[in-house]
Image 1 (cartoon, helix red, strand yellow):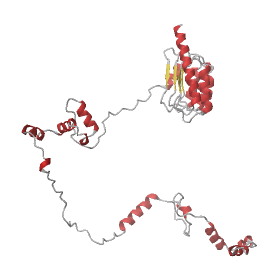
Image 2 (cartoon, rainbow, N blue to C red):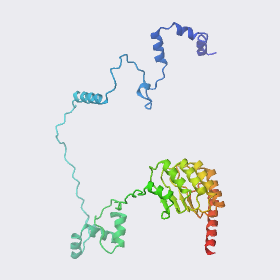
Image 3 (spheres, helix red, strand yellow):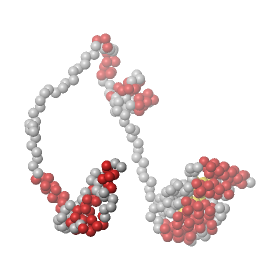
Image 4 (cartoon, rainbow, N blue to C red):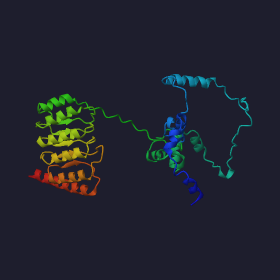
Length: 345
């Protein structure tokens, strides 16, 4: 047994509870402070958890941030600045550096005809840039300047010779205008089975109440004129997906359904796919770009639906697994071939 272990043996039979009962309140408070685990170097912890609270003064009141900042600013203004060891007088010492002129050796000097000398002396920067491009001095200019001068029969460089690469100036593309669709009017038209309404486009309208979308899907069950129904980027979730699934089971006139770029989970997509099997008029279905990946089971269900529903000829989804992707591609080829043969008849 080592000396350290022998030293520990004498503390084995000590009764800690008896020692704690004999301590005074001040000693217990000091012991509690010693046992607190503090990490002063951990910057992720609040200041109160990095060091012990050793203040005995009672709080003076609630924190007034503006008053505290004003006090700190006043204290900073009142502190006298430290004097420089060497005072600054503004005196300049030494001589400024002047780069010596480099003389061109006589053997490297080129003498041109007087007409050429006069033409080069009076040439503009744009003309000099084109001349350098024609002579193949592409290191003196950017690639755009070089190819513009070579490919164009006119002087098109206006900024002159410069080795600085400048980006092309593109015309700003305006933002897409907001969707002007009036949801309340669309809802009334769908409920009244208006024969002039053949497309319902609610794309990019992100503040549609869930009850109104559910009511719209409910009205679509009995509508016989709407051919296209689009809910792209409307922040629709599983409740809307379930309402769309119920609508597909009863509607017999809808041909195109687009619910891309929403918050539909795998459960909602599975409900829509199961409802598509009971619909024989739908020809286009788009469900891509949801908030989360639906999973392998949903992708396998998509491939199965495409195999069992020959009416679908357009399907929008980016498969991540090779197996469902190959099955879906084969099913889409077969469905389009069947549609082509039906048109010939």
